[in-house]
Image 1 (cartoon, one colour):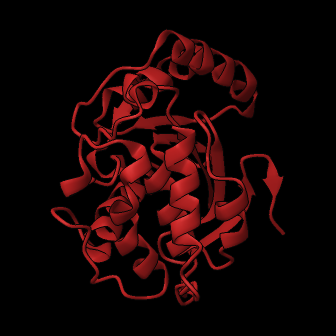
Image 2 (cartoon, one colour):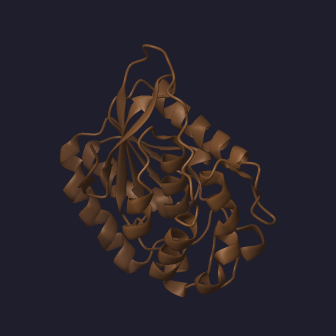
Length: 230
């Protein structure tokens, strides 16, 4: 999966302008939302792109990664645990949910971006999967991944999941999702996007990104997998 992450970073950073969303008004309660990428899946290990649902499970090394991640992050005392409809995120979330005695709430909007015509191909030949997302970051959200979604469709469904998390009244939730989905949504929606981090530090398995804010007031990037963002 490291090849796919590097390819994703290289293609997306080719976007010359990061179109940050305008700041929103409103006095909604601010929350801290942590996104965690799933542990190593069988799809990652195979080197083939698999964005199907429910998709492949995590590997034995992935199970160890999930347990280690939960042991490291459980001290943050999250008050809600969320995952996508893909089994790899739910399996990664399970140790955290057990540690916190919280259920895993499944939200379809957290799923990975469908690869469309790139589905099942080697990660090393996936440049066309990320050509449209590079355009999304430049402001052209009507660009469509061949056989898949455009930027507006992706952003709307991920927004809906974030809204559901916010509406739960959790103030420190953790959401298990996928590398491209997390990195793109965050970069498209925060008021302080960091494309340099996307290029230099694409999310590894169980990597995390932390944002603060609300759907009404907008979001601010706070931490990119251990790198604080001012």
